[in-house]
Length: 300
Image 1: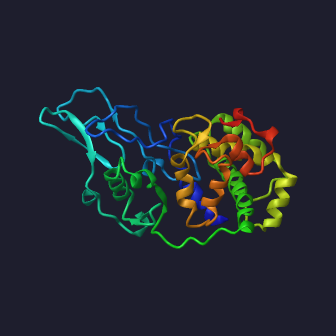
Image 2: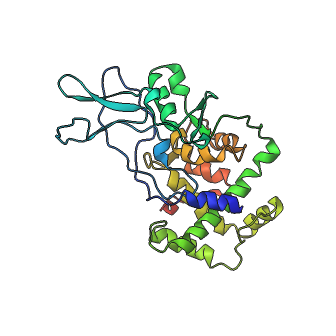
């Protein structure tokens, strides 16, 4: 558990995220559609910086400069070039131009079970496949080199939400303890977490048995309601619409899969209607919340 808390806290040191579009856009040949750029993601302690994984969209700022590409931004995997009339455009980046990697920790495993040297190499390759069936199916799977992920047994699948709920609760409590400058949690979030933090019945962080985690969830059920809603809100930002897509889940899935082999199957199961979107109600059910306790107003 200590390793997990350190891992989660290290990922919480950024500013809170702003909304952006979640789905990668298949562009018509020779055209670039201007849209609005997302800002850097922030303080979700169980996600990595989404700029590394979000298949963001191209944007153009109407600023006239000598360098036409200066304020012209392209999505991951593309770079700006100008034509003969000095008009900027986004073209697929050559993977060979990506910065050299510093170590294996930069490796990315794609859903094609291929290891890419870095996220830059991955998205540059994905760009060249735009408009193809292979490109549409290619996504970032997890952080690190591809390896054998053991099958998730039914018995193991039931254990995953027990640990996940406990992590979320403990992370929120730790953020509350360390949030001196109000840049990790909002005031409304702090008010919610304060009630959990000050509850004498709260199960302290530790390497607890599954039986104890299950018992605590039943005994102190109300302490887990907000953490489950909070995590959904941290992910639902591209756009904020009450649904999680594959891209929005990536910041949470990518670091979890190498450590929790039931991650993929768990989130697939959460999509109960198999429409490739996880609604808040489906998310809450996955984590064992009762229907009457699902409240959109808790996404604060």
